[in-house]
Amino acid sequence: MGFQETFKALSDPVRREILTMLRDGKMSAGEIGAHFDMTGATMSYHLKQLKNAGLVSESKEKNFVYYELNTSVFEEIVMWFEELGAKKNEKTDMGNSRTADADNSGGN
Amino acid sequence: MGFQETFKALSDPVRREILTMLRDGKMSAGEIGAHFDMTGATMSYHLKQLKNAGLVSESKEKNFVYYELNTSVFEEIVMWFEELGAKKNEKTDMGNSRTADADNSGGN
DNA sequence: TAGGTATTTAGAAATTTTTCTAAATACGCA
DNA sequence: TGCGTATTTAGAAAAATTTCTAAATACCTA
Image (cartoon, rainbow over all chains, first blue to last red; front, top):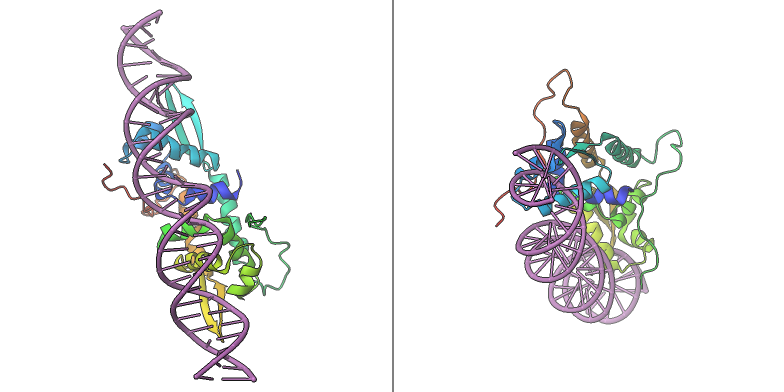
């Protein structure tokens, strides 16, 4: 559940729309799916990406699966942006910059 | 240059690493490329994504092209997260939520 | 102007992501 | 138990992204 999954999850418009919908409270997979013109299987795929990214959490009730926003993860993301925004010519040394996880290992 | 391009640009680890490198000031395409095990053509492709997303700006000097962080765009992104984080049961109505740009138009 | 360095463009191959259909699983209720 | 609803999994097709090689462009300097 690193930055990679999270940023990847956020890169899809359907998944961002799901997050926006969840702003108003938790919803079942079916309720979420009703807003899109896609099969339930596809919705399930997107919900799984969001869950793996830590952006939502799920809870089961009867035979519904409810999804809910997990705001703590996007606080981490916001911090990542803030570190990036902290300019080089600040007075105090802000400490070591957080490194992004580029796969910089051997290509060919 | 909407959210779509920006989030997409941020979803790649190489591009996030480039942004981190630029935290210390502007760099030429060649200097940036030297940090990765990829061809210049591939680097050029990534830099173009970042530029189209508004995350960096470029300036030409001699026959070098310098890239520089454009922090104003990630302020917008941070706002998007903050609106998402503003819970449903806040006292004051925070105004209309910004809608993500899901392509919810006719599928098949 | 010719040659050299820096970077981008074009087009194709490789890889990854998104979507679908069909089938499987899970659970509640009569 | 057996049926019906909700959701997920598996596997394949379609679409998008990443990467490369080769060639083109841009600009400086001798």
